Image (tube, rainbow, N blue to C red):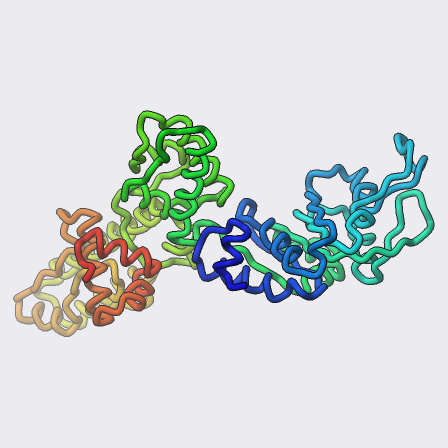
Length: 425
């Protein structure tokens, strides 16, 4: 069965490359009995993977049991997983089978496996290594033939380093690792999922029509970070389906009301990624705007100071002027620039400072050429952004991928900006 058939069978929406990769691995490992660890943030749909693996395996006629390890109290987790004998603890009025006994010849999905207590991790390791377990209150080992698929939203390597998870168990579970991408990285899949949920809730609540999105509302969806991932998106659509009964066409303003922490500037300025952050990192658009303001104001102050020093030195000699320029270079290095150049090498600062030799020559001839301001005070942020985009495209001869990397944004974001400024061809 191809991936599209898998998606239709299991109700999975999306065409994201990372999602397809995860599904492809699940299909490949399904016929085997090796353990699988699914990694991904809460709400990304990790539960689809073990279901796919079970249904496409030889165990599909056996039981499939999903266990949320974080929802079971520490004092009863061993009893839930491995069972207990009558009288083994207070309240154990009869013998009870655990999930590993119930799921014999089937599959167990251990969700939030990192929440297991260390004592339970020892018992689980024994099951994986020898296919044996011992009930609570018993001394007799029992055999079980169970396929284990685990999932977590925790950094497992860090948990191992901190002693919260056994290293040997981690490697036994992580024979094959499947990574589920967060919703914010899935691009237009967000729109597809919104439409799917809108249709579902229109039918569920018997609405005359499903809610639809305007283009500016789609822009909000695509630029929001979705910390709750698909689960959060589903909840937002359900709320809208009920509350927006008189307004089935959703605008950006309406959408923002349901995303209380959405604070994107309507005209975000594109700046290069700094310290690993940018359009594809953890910085939001308001942070980018603040960084741009800081760069602009710092540079304007630097150039103003440079102009003042040059004017004060009119009539001086070239050596003195060069000394002033060298001092200015030190100032600019302190502000984060590696060197002082005739043309400042920064895609967001559109200016040109005359070379040192030209300045000294003009001072010597008592004909000082004034340096330009860093930016025109009358330019808006949107105009600055447009200038930056054009400059990046010119630099790379219209190659969008290279231009996007120069600007520190994704190629999809650049394409959207080109459409916004009527530059798309």
